[in-house]
Image (tube, rainbow, N blue to C red):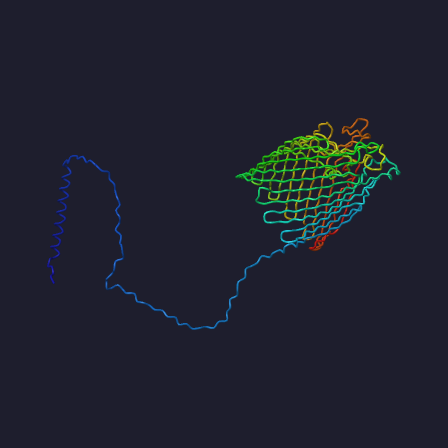
Length: 593
């Protein structure tokens, strides 16, 4: 092997020579700085456009041929299995359950009976029988009667009202139809004679009892997913014990045609009422001129319904052709039929309003329902309700508090008003309705301004409370008061489920003052004559009704009802006092029949 024999001293000489050469180069460079090199102009003919070239990537993993790379040694596994006897059996998991309340037991029938002071008797029965999956048959019976006994009443004041209803209904896939019948018998007495006007012998010769009888039958059909929607027909026969009788038939039907987002509908109605009063209304010595009436109406009501997100609008008119067949008179009537509602604040504030009108068909049956002490000598004519304009707001102030406020203005021609009949001493028969103790009908043109307000509170599912009030101002064509119409009505109602067994409820209402007058002559006028007629102001009255009940079991419950609990001896109609405190107790039994 070759070995250098250079000594360390020699190496030092070489290093010194290298540093000396570098110093001389630096010195020459500094001397060149003093020389002027001059200026040069450089022209760039292409902008600098830098580019990034692709980086070199390894396309594949290189093979290593190094002999020192360790080779992986294959490993094999084997399991030495030994059977082990086990008696463990895992238990199945069960989901936790929520305790369910048993569904209430429903029965298809019930019967109720109660009795109280004044000889008051209440009886009710109802059953709903399912014939098959699509058919059912219902029967209902209601009875309320009293043996009377009102203080200072000189004639009989008994009454009773009994009604029986039956209906059949069948439901198919695209339609349902049914039929119904009803029977009713009412008994009232014209007991409202002026106190001290008649002697005992005269009172014994008065037949003050009136009986009303009614029978009706009807049918309906309702069709789904068709232009034809529904049709109803009803016939009613109403008559009394003094040879008065009335027939009424009503047919209504409707069609609806969809139009994109709107719907065009047409309603048709035919309404006939006709009857006769065997007694003369102007009370001659004998009944020589019975009262006959016959009124027919045919109407059509086209309308366009529009529904938007928050708006509901119904634009329509009501065209009616009215005929007085008894007097051979007829006329056309056109009424507005516009209603709308708009949701201002979700369910909190909903504004609604409308302008509607109708030719309202009056009947002897409707007058008796409003005032059972009318005389069988009435003039029956339709009411021309020209328009009823109203606007209001309703909604939910709180989840359990709802309200409704409405203002209205209506104009009605020939609005029926009840007026006390005068005493007639010239009558030779023994009918007991011409002693100043019955009412006739007077028609007046009236404009009515009304305000209505209502609040309903659902404290919880067991307690509900509601209150409402109505205020009216009347303007009559004759300048007289709106006879027997109150300016104020208010009511409060409450229902409370105390527990699983106890429940109670109450209904309080107030009716304001009303005006009437008593006359000694039957001129048929509705204007009191000074010195002859006596004005009557009926005081407003307050009436309190309540009930309480106890459920003994699912079948049997007991109840107690109270009426006129304030014992207010008010007059609903002139000279007609009502019963004082009334208490009635009874039981209700539910069952399957």
